[in-house]
Length: 383
Image 1 (spheres, rainbow, N blue to C red):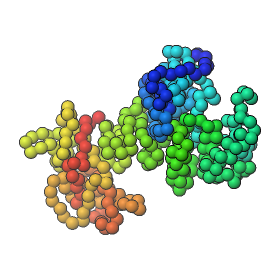
Image 2 (tube, rainbow, N blue to C red):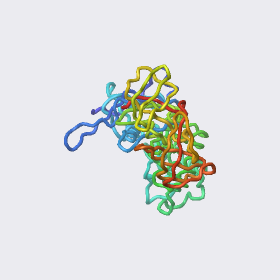
Image 3 (cartoon, rainbow, N blue to C red):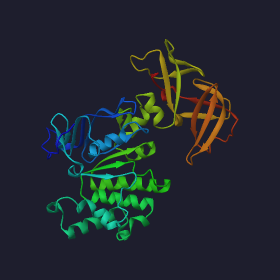
Image 4 (cartoon, rainbow, N blue to C red):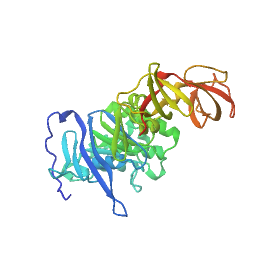
């Protein structure tokens, strides 16, 4: 597409509520063998102003390409984009607003700071570029830079060269730069991947707190499910350029719609089997025996998978009997502080079980009994 850059125009009715509107967006890349691959495949999102959304998925699922299209760093092949109610891209209407005119702040994985500048100059950069007539007065720039550094907790570093800063400090500078310009939309491209675990945990809290305080619309890319669950108002799970499930963290975790979502987010046991319906209720015949389930979705075929979260299972070193109860052997034990994760081998099936360290004392190779309530078992097609 060779559309020229045009000024934003008014959007349609209801657009005043939308921070980011994505309609039928597509972006293809060509492989070395000549094949076209859809990195973004007809994605539609409506993110309201002030919401914090997370694009979640593994490497290669299309989340960063989608973010870059919204930012204007990649030009889509089709669809439409609006930011704060202003169209910034439309193939059909030949609209393509350049990145610097979209009113978007961006925080990158690699910080994207100017190494020859100090903190002050890096944070002030978006306010000191572009046509001179559009730049704020010098005193206003200085005020906004100082306020941004106060907000991210590093005002004392204002004169420091960025090359002398730690990774966490550099990412705070990057965040300060994104908010100093006063943008109502901020995009985050895996911003915490390059900092250590403790700093990552602290910055997650600070980013969410800052977003709530300032009220900007946030779109955040990550492959880290824990990060997504902590930050998001809504999570969009991507696979092969498509949004395969959209919802709150609670909904995504407790009601996955596909096997892919269930296995990608959280620790889940996925057991293949054949559905049996009779007067005694619904059961699934599996390699470890029959599993009773409480509900069966409509129009489900015979080949199914039973999905159940690891924290819904129990484990005992004392013999037990009853529905959905099996005996197995402890393969591994992982300590996570608040809980233990046991992998237990039942036949050829490996099951994950979370348990309180104070309630169960066992070791690798020990015989244990495990089980799950029928109500904790979700059924879906084996796809």
